[in-house]
Amino acid sequence: MKAVEVVIVGAPVACGTEVKDTWRELSAWVGGQLHHTYGDAVRVVYFDLFEPDCPPLPPNGGELPLALVDGKVAVSGGKLSVPSIRRAVEAARDIPSTPVPSGAD
Image 1 (cartoon, helix red, strand yellow):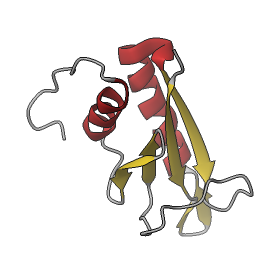
Image 2 (image 1 turned 60 degrees about the horizontal axis):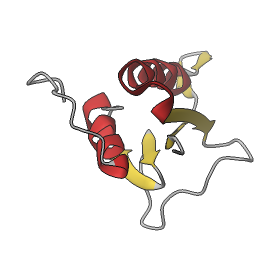
Image 3 (image 1 turned 90 degrees about the vertical axis):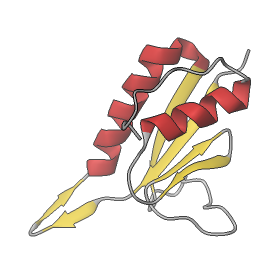
């Protein structure tokens, strides 16, 4: 069975005189969480919005960070919500739902 693909798109953040790669770091953390839950059934890939190989944004737009699960928007703007991404992963492959503690979203 092909792994569910989670694509996260972000951009470097200017903070004073520094540029931080916060979304890339958070994407790695999200990937770790998803791998812990689903193992090799999920593949997480991060793209910087300005990288030439970044996938196109959805036709109706989208806000960063953007998380696509098998090409469908799971998160657009705000924060990278692991519970939202989990629900999209489970829906994409009909994986049994993983209980999420209340207030975790």
